[in-house]
Structure formats: structure tokens, C-alpha cells
Length: 185
View (cartoon, rainbow, N blue to C red):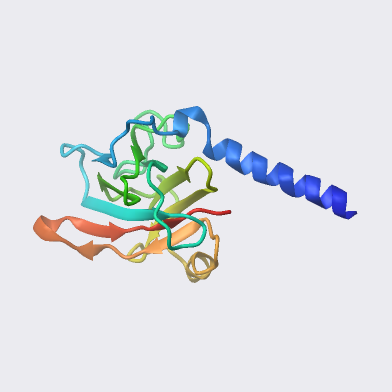
């Protein structure tokens, strides 16, 4: 493959990634809050609070007004009550915009594994910002028995689709998770 063809292929791959991350239904409106509820207080499950900062590709510069789309299954592993795999229109989701310091946070529950599988519990992320790259990945949890040694190895790789996070104990029994995001170039 010549250099011109390689360059074209690379551009197409990057464009396709950005198109997925910038699906209009998955971009937070300009006035969206920086904090929100993925799961209401009435949702059954172990409570979690997730917070973090979105950084530019340099890993140091906070990105204000970045769109943060998160979604997950309920405690039983279903995206929708009638469809365990209905992740195109999930019931538990939030569209957020980072604050002026690049911070975001949300309250939720610990998601369940898909019914009848050993797929680890996870929270999906799609993060994008004007003039910046994007990042699509999912949090998996250190305490989840479905997280294998291979997944731990993959999560340690730069740019992995997995981010292995520990749930720390918080006030009133709420688990705390910190998830900073570094956008890709």
C-alpha cells in the first residue's frame, strides 16, 4: 500500500470514529449541566457517584464544555426492561457538558452484567469537544469477578477501550469512582 493510500485509509478511520462520537443524539446540548443523574434515587442497585475531568490530548489542559454521554444497564443487566441489548436507546443515560474547569459528575447505580453472560459490569462513555479529538470507552470495575487477567492487561494499554476503575467507599454507602478522560488527537 502506498503512502497516499495509507493516508486516505487513516483519514477514513479517524472520520468514522468522529462520526460515531458525534452522532447528534449522543452529543449534549450546549446548555447541558456538568452534573446529573443517570439513575434516579428510586432505581434499585448499589449507588455510585462518578466524577472526573476531561483533558485535551496533552493530558494536562482541562477542556470546558466537552460533551460527555454516558449510558449503562440497570442492576439486572438490561438497557431497557424489554431488551437487554437495547443500547441504541438506553433507559439509564446522561448527556452532560463539562464546567469551565473541565469537570463532570453523575450519580448512578452499579450496572449489572448482561443476563446469562460473564461480560463485566460497565459504563459506556462517548466524549467529544469542538476543536479537540474524541474518546469512546467503557469503565469496568476492579471488584467485578468477571474482569479477567486479559481484560486487566488490555485496560493498561494506552488508548484501550477499557478503563479499569476501583470503587472506593464513600459517605452513606455510596461508592465513589474517579474517571478522568484524555481526548485523542
